[in-house]
Length: 182
Image 1 (cartoon, rainbow, N blue to C red):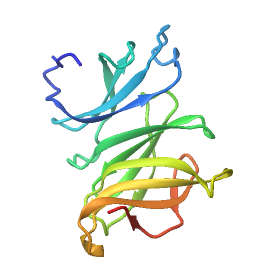
Image 2: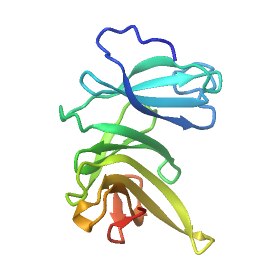
Image 3: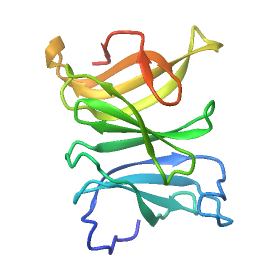
Image 4: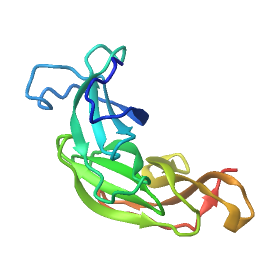
């Protein structure tokens, strides 16, 4: 990634790539994007869009896609997935004691939709959301929300917790209590 020369942006902290099919509509140009990364910076913690047209060997800066409305340093760790049923992108953000859910149809304009709040696992980090088959049955699927957290309230150390439930493209509904991998 080339050095960022925008003086209002102070440096990289964390980002996650998203790999997907060609989306020429994205910038209204005939481009094939292999990766899009939402990157957090140290100044005011906006999430920025970088893209690659060479399979992830180099990235180019596009724009800020999500400003931090909270002003808190705990507005981080973006995870972006495609939700097929709603035909929208979903971004999960770690926001102190909750996971914020945002949706977008173009990866540039994001709308807040809901939060999954957990005050018993400390500061939330690195949320992830994915679907799994139940009992190897592809017709019976559940969503898993995985969250980095502090397990001291449960006699554990810092680690990965998860919840199994349903996700409608806007809101996650847990069907299980918190479970821990460590």
